[in-house]
Length: 208
Image (cartoon, rainbow, N blue to C red; front, side, top):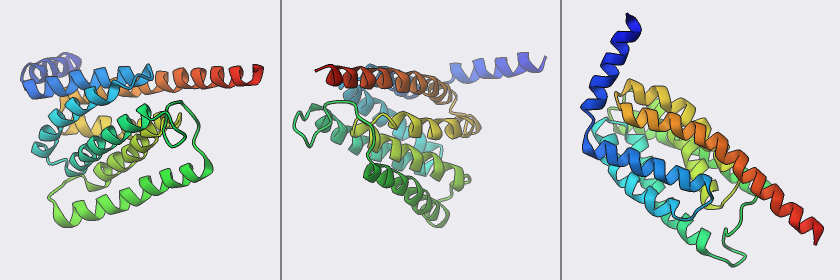
């Protein structure tokens, strides 16, 4: 009976989902599928999804995730340029993070967590500052690595996803919650797809 009630509530919530949320979910799904395929078109699709979900997050008082969306927008433009850049300064191929890049990634995640928590507790009415800040800061780190086309981006994005899922359910953002579950699964598949491609590329180099 409990399952029936929960499913009925879920069906009712999905029916009441706004058109804007449907667009956010649709383009978010498209973006992550293109990312798994290592396709640069993930960025224009992502920009549309980011724009839609930003309005929803402000309305839900998830301010850190709203800032995350703004960061996503900036990193999407940056990543788009990096992926198209065929020079040594670009990110035309998948690679692993260097020691320096790993340090930068940790700095983004931990520094961002502290900064966002401070901002949320002092300048907003957020009722979930610790979790909201953590979800955003780890996703910041993942997006930075994605723009660099680094394999480890999938790990950081999934650290963010696994914490974001219950948070979004708590905030009644049902479709975005399911999108995040989907992203979690795709990130696992994406990691192994990218690793396979990277290993294959290294194998080619060794046989030359």
